[in-house]
Image 1 (cartoon, rainbow over the protein chains, first blue to last red):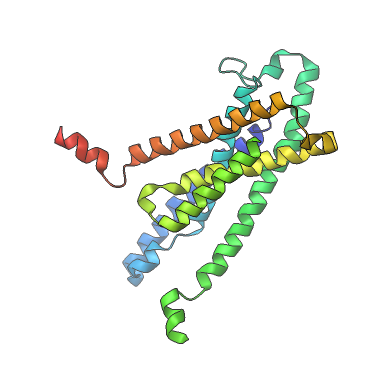
Image 2: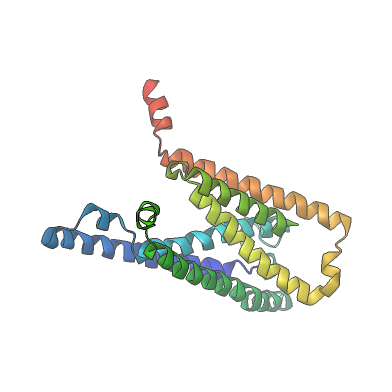
Length: 138
Length: 102
């Protein structure tokens, strides 16, 4: 009914956090370049903000396509009050909130859990030696 | 059906992203979009299965056709969003060059 609103809210929070973190990381890098003469390669390495943007994109992508599905089934309308259930009385609103609490929260949690897995795997991949180096050692 | 179509779109897009390894095509946002929607529809499918049990796997023909149309429309919408992002960001400068020539 409106389950996509839960991951949608998470997407807004995550995007804001990622933007703030990106600005902080950029400032930190600028200071490092000034004092320690950090190499260009270190500058290029994406920090945690980059990984937070993965979660934001995952959430936004899902939310946009799910919102379209809700529009398709008439559960969301492009005019006020936007949610069809809001015009159908307290029983429908209660059902909608119940669905948001069950399906919506599970969606947000599963996307986040998968993202945590991706971050852990990517950290392991980053630690791996590059292909050229691996060939030299063999 | 919508879930299936989106998962196929996600896998195909990710395979192309990996093969091409071309950041200028901006395939990343398209991959995230399809995977995000796939995960969310997967959750939806689990809840629906818990409610309908075996009936979930034997949908009515009309529902299946409707779901197929929805799946294809979702893929089309995602592709349109990707093209718009590609043209606005214009990483190859193609749009900029065309406009400059005029």
